[in-house]
Image 1: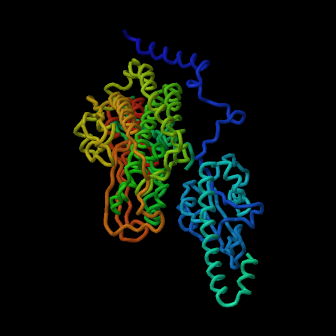
Image 2: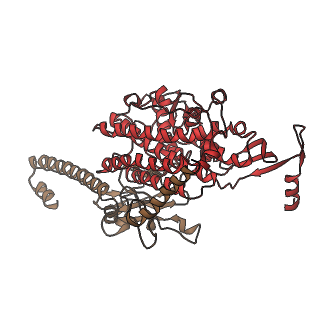
Amino acid sequence: MLGEGIVKGLAETARNFLGSYVSKDRLTTVQYPEERLPQIEAARNFPFLVYDGEDWQQGMRCVSCLICEKECPPKCISIEKSKDKKLDASGKPQFYPTVFNIDVSVCMSCQICVEVCPFDAIKMDVDFELSTKDRFGDLLWNKERLSKSNEYYREIHPTEAAAVDAQLAEERAKLEAKSKLAAEAKAAAAATVPAQPAVGATAEK
Amino acid sequence: MSATTAATAHFTPKPSTDGGEGQLLEVSMGPQHPSTHGVFRMDVALDGERVVKLKPVFGYLHRNHEKIAETETYLGSMPYTDRLDYLCSITNNWAYALAVEKLAGIQVPERAEYLRVITGELTRLQNHTSVIGFLLQDMGASGTPLMYAFREREKVLDLFESLTGSRMMCNYMRFGGCRADMPAGWLQQAQKVVEAFPRFLDEFERLLSGNEILMARTQGVGVLSKELAVDAGITGPMLRGSGVNYDIRKVDKYGIYERFSFKVPLGEHGDVYDRYMVRLLEMRESVKILQQAMRDVPPGPIMDAKTKLRGFRPKAGEAYGRIESPKGELGFYLISDGSPNPYRYRVRPPSLVNLTVLEDMCLGQNVADIVVILGSIDFILGEVDR
């Protein structure tokens, strides 16, 4: 019969319309600024720089190795390496970036900087409400704006951050064990000649 | 030139070319066409309602993809491939990864192959649903079918976001595997989506397939003959809609596709309705592949341990990697001279090649059918213009 298909189709739309009052499956929209969907953990938007501890300048993990700048496909990162070294969070003297800019109007959120960073210093943010009236200044993010604490990283990507923290702790432990071993060997070598400086070395530690 | 002279110049009636009565009218359709495929223009010559000439004009979205890729590292081009066919970034990644793996002779671990099949077939599902939605939108059914399609697509995109971090620009594959493993509970969630998918397809078919208006608008419209389809190098659902049994998943058996049992749906008449049905049936087959892949996915590593991410330099040589993307044969041709960036990088885009027969399909049809035929081609301008 002509029109049967149309009637069938209309029955389907009616089922969907009425179903939207009872089933969450058929009404999937949310009223955005008031209602929000839960953030998906793996989500990514723009990169940020992770720092340990309280002070962002002191604890910045970036050692200005320039790998991300080189690997970035659209070349949105620009870094200037420092001339001097300063102590990082674990007390090791390291270079640091005097300038670290990301042009987020160029960034394409591909995450390659995160993948190539050997120091776990750059990670992806999830903040997406970034609209601004200033096209130029507000879209070129400097070091200060990019710096976010490790606590924040743990909050937005808990699983990933836990893995990174564990790996870093392991590396640090290995490094400490190594330096301890070296110090002990040094102490042992020193102990064979005079006893006095070896005691001083352990006391210092 | 003022606006009035431009308008008169454009709409000046010309004498009929076939010696018949009446005069031809040249109409420029687009570039801001409401059909949501991208920025595309057609110069159409009309004899009354009938199309006598059609010239597609594209290039509005050209962004120098191939040349950029020749100055980037191999890895650096991966996120750019997402932007080719922006509806199905994962299959683009796959084709490129396949070409580079052929070039460098990299083996992909078992689990990564399964992950590729799962994400690739999910991509096919979401591409075909949205394309059918767009086709109906082009036909004038504004809203309902497209919204239903997008409701389902959203579920697949949520899966992509929790796996890869992004809904559309996934940047998921790497040379020798995949970037991220499935997070906890992802497989169960994906299984749920896939199990529920045939129900949506039934609903979609009840809504559309028997609809008399849809049949009147699509059956016998935009017929593409078998011979022309083969001669023009058409691939994908468009070729199969014309009744040619050619699916690269079956022909090349790339990845691990020979392990799955699935059929290749074929059309008979080569009209818009057949292309629509082929896509619907293909989705059902994709669901079958997904069910098999999700049942069998083994544990193990997802990246080839020998392949480095940085400093990747394949030996000098050339390779062509191709896959059956949702739109047809997507191929990447690479020439390496041993340096970190390819010497030549070429994309074989299914959208562009499939678009070349637009005029042949439209000749003799009504002007209102052009948009329907265009919608049935399933092209994305990001891939056409590159």
